[in-house]
Image 1 (cartoon, helix red, strand yellow):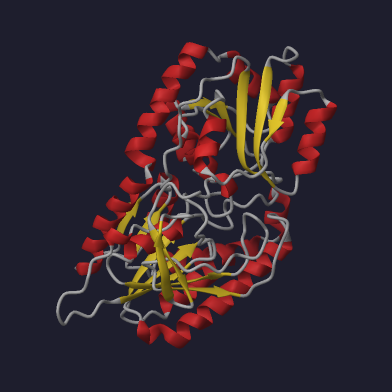
Image 2 (tube, rainbow, N blue to C red):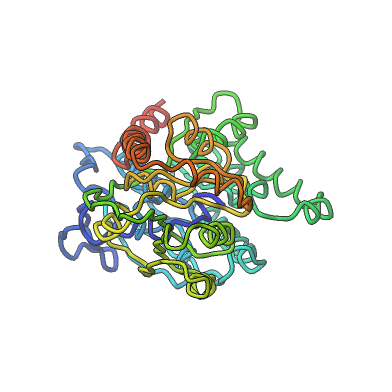
Length: 435
């Protein structure tokens, strides 16, 4: 899927090298410490002037995480904290680890509320949709009971039902819709199922269209989503695309002698591992190795396939330390961004690879396919097509990969660097909310 449901398990959890934050217990600062996880810069939060009362903002986002550097709702909450006192409402279940979230509080976010919801262990199962629906209901009720407290409301899509309810009942509050996915369009349902349930899918999508049509401000994580959503926003809506922000990873480790493909993220059913393994099996023995970073419901299957086929590989497990992750990825030559079936436009794992200066093997459409071709950020292939992937690997030249790596580093610095994304978002929202 996208950044909302994709892949970003290792993208990345911090070990303390980045944002200074305060840990908060029961709403009270304990001590100022160097960041043990991603957060917001303390110095970015302005102090109130004499007699000033800051506005209050509510962030509603199931995918909010204090553990991931490339987390859009976290970035939005950090940015809004420079403009208002922010309260975040999210779920108590971690989509990426499939475990309960550690209910952390981080400054300068005033409060983070973790609503109880159902766990799920399959990203393409009915239980996930039920869990999301229950969160939408409970988060919507939370807002309705407390909306008088807030002057600004931010909500993420693809939670179409929640966004529709909140944006249509916001009254005179300033509303921000952040499009991270367009459901059901990007979900990997078969065409047969879509035809059989056409009225249901049409109603589902109608909630999206009507939700964004009520927003005062619209943001999106890709040009593809941005252009599609623009068709439905109201006159006067302020709109802009911001890619996901990621922190830079170290790029100092020498490359391996053997052509190395790295995969970092969730080991789930959306990713085109079968095609990659088939192409590696057909290649000259020992000519390609695979680095695997992450975990998921297909971990045992993937590692068993690699062992059974005799394919060179290393499995690193889940790597949360960005320095360690950078050291692993920088030894590789290519990052694997292969999907079985997705209409999403930009993945979290692609941000991770670019942060490490890695060109990608990409089957995703939308922004990423165009960027890879236009800026020479790697190679595009057709998902599920072995010959297409083999042709990409046949074009690999070490000198050309070095040039592509420089392109990736430049693109990351200009469009994906988290500090830059947050600063641009701050200037945009400041102007929107002060008008």
